[in-house]
Length: 425
Image 1 (cartoon, rainbow, N blue to C red):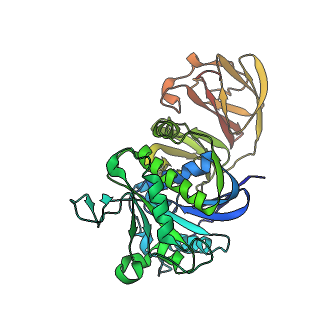
Image 2: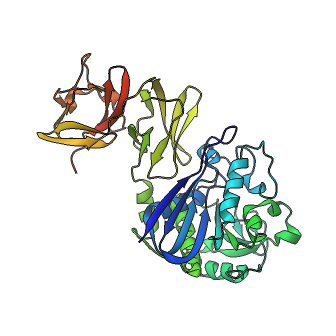
Image 3: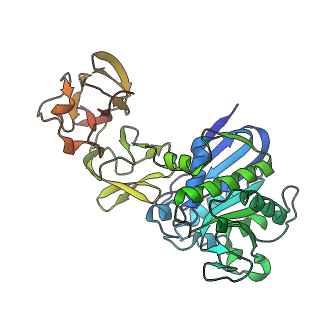
């Protein structure tokens, strides 16, 4: 039976604001591949590709463990490393370093006996070539490469790093979007020639008997879907080598990747409120929160809600979508269901959720109801509310069709759902 297990590692005091998430996709018994994205926050090909693995792939045989957001604080800021280069902290890291807990936790995962191979995903400068051509195409470039630290390591499985990297690169070169996008193998010969790489994640892995590779798409490829395309093709080749059997629910083409990147996502905050992510209005005022320490959940692993100054910011990867100005409540009441009438039909809905409405809705509850955008100073329970009665500027979305319905019990905030006048599906 296929399972998706999600393990959210704990937050720590005096540490990075956002810790990474480990996702486990398990099929029938077999080898395990660990895919790590986002060690550098300004390399989006390296973290959007693993987010596709989480959302759109099923594993039938073997296991795929995925960390899409290793350096989450740097991802949302689109910086290589807000606390320094995380990929230079694997030989030694000071306990006072804000990356300390992240680095130590990912080390433990890498060293897990179940892990048979490690992939670390990046975007690198230029296009690697064996000989100098110009400042973009040269031996010092990192883009469009499969990186190895040495030709072989002593291990029972997958120790022939060079052969594996050449096989993957050869497969990638059978379908290039531009001829100059072709992949090469870059052997850094870390032990003897690259002191900085001796501090890296992949070198830590191979020195502990774990076959490890880095996949680098080029930063000079400006189109994100193209980079995701190459990353996913590389990962699929590694999965085949490891013996992982998989299915995906989309065609691996650049147009399809573009379509999925535009797909709307939603975020649930504190378990009682919900918002769209990509089509959200830039500013949400008086957003109800019951605690200054918030939690959030989304099907998109790159979505985050981050406190900044006296407000919160909703991110999806490095995209800053909205600012939420909070209204805090000391007390809260728990409510999981509420009865409403939609276009003449009575039903019970989950709180929080999004409800499609065509003509009108009516909340059937003894709780106090506040429909944001409906001009009334009274309890709005049992009121028939149509779209023309709602003030557009209070909508939560850019299309002015989605409105907040908040539920209260005396002075306690209970939860919220959204009504969407975009029409029933």
